[in-house]
Length: 113
Length: 117
Image (cartoon, rainbow over all chains, first blue to last red; front, top):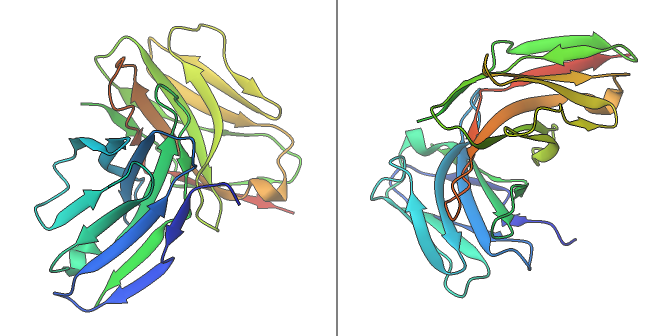
């Protein structure tokens, strides 16, 4: 499968714990995006990378959130001290530089209890 | 900032019939792209159709076509000959053309479409 891969698919964590998600983009894609989708809403932009550089972050990305793409390949999104409001689907997407079509992964569903 | 509004939370259509999903948007940008994405129950978002704002001709992709009204900031999706596999959430999305910019998408809240046998 050469699509965007996200792991884990589901994560249940206790409030206050740290969690980390991984995204493996399509290998030829330079750009990688993270979106958050809460119930009944469309995805909301969190951040994006051009290769290994994180070029833009949304105001939604509080200081408890950090994203990395160390070698310009896979990316990780870490949430520290999780809160119930962090419960959502976290979507990763990738695209070519200058490409308008974003290819999405299946997402990681986070539940904070 | 851009906003995208989908006023129909849920819709249903009989198999083989035609359905139109509505979308309006607000922007001060002159150059941009509009998209319809489909999110089946498996949750992976798939691009259905794309429209460049500078093109007057409406985009079509097989059974899917759009009615793009730039002055009215309206972008509706028409699905002809609806099939059971069209059952999904449909999201309208906006992307400004920003040269070397982020190409981030702004999504509407979605329309849940059910195709009834």
